[in-house]
Length: 147
Image 1 (tube, helix red, strand yellow):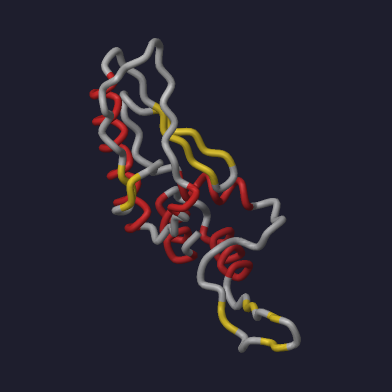
Image 2: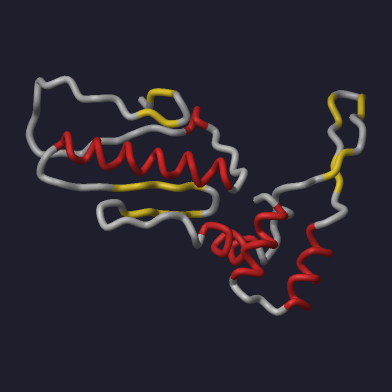
């Protein structure tokens, strides 16, 4: 979660200033370093993410993703840092078209709000009645075809 983006959204939600200042102090000036074998890296600043195990994580994540675009044809599902989009229709081509539009919207939103996506974990699952010999169009996400 990009800290400046979160602060902007807190302001948009009209969260009282004193609470925003508390959250800014909670998020800012955090650092990390990595130890590999016996070697320590330099200390670096954390400009994104919320401390793991924080009781605020769910609330802040909900606020951060609250402007995630909703449509009548796609249902969004969020759990922790996982996201699923679902669509259904009587024609498979319409479902694929709808889902591709949804994936394109997710790309735009993630780029705007600086959300990094691990595309290696992204995939598409299709459930349908019957069978078809027809080749289905592949969905793509951040210029990668989904399995």
